Image (cartoon, rainbow over all chains, first blue to last red; front, side, top):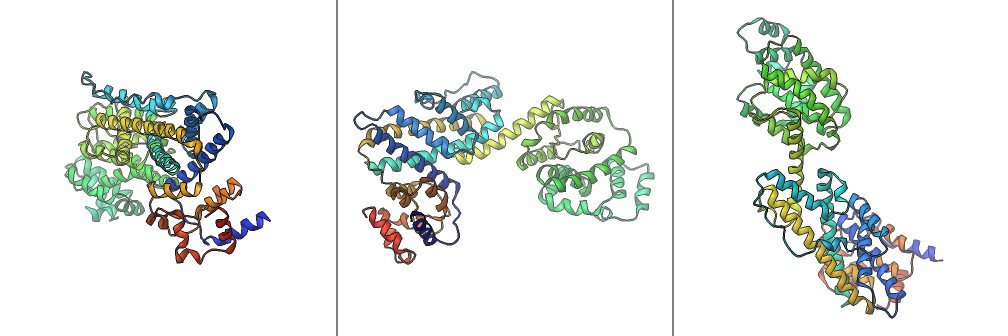
Length: 160
Length: 331
């Protein structure tokens, strides 16, 4: 019966599938991963406050699951599933300070290499990639982070 | 000159060969004519039209055929499908090989470049899988800058036997006055690639277009990534505090996020798939099936996610079942 209803409802939809942009696909995947997870968290623990770290864990997990076509998501997934205690590795770099100017470095290339290494640290799994690969992945990572923040914003807005 | 390129009688080529006043270049050109393959030349202008012109202008020589070959050579290898690449480069290499036989003596410098280039090829072989069209363009620029175009023939031909089976690798030419050893060349190629990648990132990171210089841009990128990560952390913190009293109405979430998220080119469709989730339909079905739903266009105009269903246009598409479903959600 349910399947019939489903099929029936399918027919309601437009005949030709619309092409979704990758951003949209990601956002949908992300929210559909995160929201049920949060719901489940809600339901599981009725009395105790939801641990902030657990939420962060879910947030990161949803990110990793929604972007599985990228290399960094695999690294992120590994990191998340291996650690029982949700790590705050992503937040460890959030010290609020900008990268200081290395005016003392004479060799410009050395400075650039230094910065590239910094960037590698930011990207999950960045240190295991070579630089060219890392730069490509960083582009994807930035895009997904942007989408993630907007999704989170809307979720938060919705619930306040 | 172009006329000659297009396959005039070989007698003229012979004449050129015999003429002692000819420069090395003209003799090589003659050989090209001798072994002319019309197909190749006709391709050259289309593959690389603009750059050939610029290239020639900077070289100050009226040698469209030869330099056309050179430029197309690298482009063909880098950007064209494997099938095309093999044939074109194959033709090209054959021609070059024949040129070597009758080449006049070259200077020591050129010979050194030849040897170094051979070494460089092995190193660059490993990078060939990462070659992009952008890289080839940067190499084109490098070629424009050098005044050692004459080397191309001697150098390429020496590699024919080695590389005749390889279909793609970077053909890097050293710039004038720069080191020509294989390490520097490989290093330079790598740096070119990095620069290309960074240009792409420049578009992605807001506010980066005003900054010039790799270091500054990298700074910006790092700061941007850090700020994004911090934002995510902050939002998840907020979510943690807020979530207990959540209803998690997915309809609203989808609607609002669809409004705020940066999306483009969304066609005008109606039914939000998320409705299925709340109704207890299997989750994966919702995810996979309804990519053809996109309430974006209608939702954008109003904050009320349900208003799109009041649209006359949308109402007509609805089954009564669906409407019942919707009402069951408490709308």
